[in-house]
Image 1: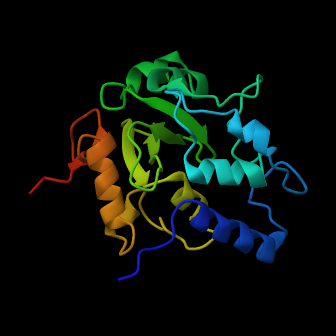
Image 2: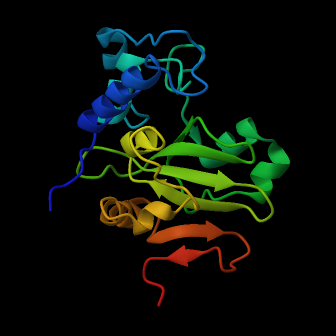
Length: 210
């Protein structure tokens, strides 16, 4: 079976689909026309550990730098540790109640989506495509975090190329093309979990659960 496109190839497909449908804009993009970063500006950006950007992020920033809204006032990528991200995005009380730092000790980069939830690219260990997973943390009722996309490239394609998560955040674990990639990321970056909540009830799911 042929593998699905990943990385730059998938993001190029997303961009082509956007340009064909609505002039190249994603819902919520705060500009009339996309405007990307110059190559030298992208080359100056690195991950917190000094490694290069995942291919998907570099490619999309070259297309548009406004939608993802991932740059701080100094033009650097606005990475935070998990708890600091929760404080910044919500408040101290929420950060206390929804602290998944022990499971996710790496760096987090918030991307668009959610009201009582946040999506973030997690910089732990990259997969074989050089991509980092996208998680969702939800604070509605019991705080809950799950692995939702194997990479930013797949996150960007959701709703543009294909509706990938029509019912549940974790729908892609049942997807023909992406299930194995998500399982790989779960073992690399989430101790084998699919989802985890702090109450330890049925919302916590592990790949090795019987």
